[in-house]
Image (cartoon, rainbow, N blue to C red; front, side):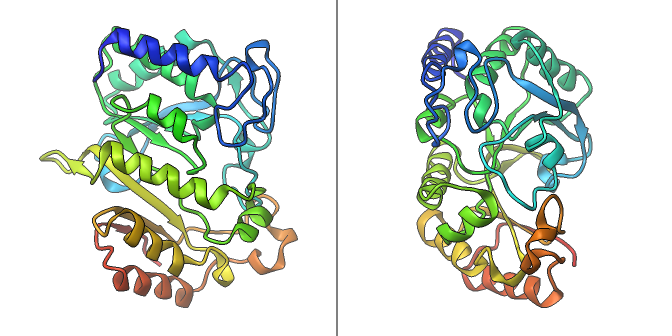
Length: 297
């Protein structure tokens, strides 16, 4: 872990990006230091929906004692099928101080969690970074995990280098039109998503686990298979293999169901079929992506 003076300098640089906000690739330009809000509907203070131990993540993340999840409210995307939409889009949560956020981390560590898992953290990167600094001063030692939608700013990610141990981003789409239609993503989403994953890979590389199989460092990329080939899973996996590495851990998820506003889109208003998931599994094998996890279906 970096020393305290370096972290404080990183915090200063991160907070400077809030004045004309470019914390994420949308670069809304609002002054969040004055509590102005852009696309993510977030001001200066972090907003937290809940924090607790969680057993629903990938095996090396949840382990046997659970992952210490901190669910951040709001998001810089608007996925019409988001399963956590009350948190990400309806704003369910409460503002907390930086000190309170740091205390959440320490409490989760005391509960025995294997890691601190920041869920949808991108738009609160400066605040989280500051809270991490305080928590480290007070004895935080367990791995830190960045669980994001994959639409992160590379500039901000570089401020997390040497601080975040495990990255868990999404690779959602390969077609910008699909990204815009189903996640309200800007045209640069596809390129920025790949740049995000490349930067995370540069920082932490392949997944490293301890003797108990618990993740200590590394990258896991999540991909959610969508109905009707909308995510273009074949091409997503091909790009991961070619542009990142065949050694990257991939979590291929079958858990899609039509949540949020999906009923307004007939083509995604159903669960995926066995055939669709089996096709995705075949693509995984074809690209030589043998590290990671699949879900029963």
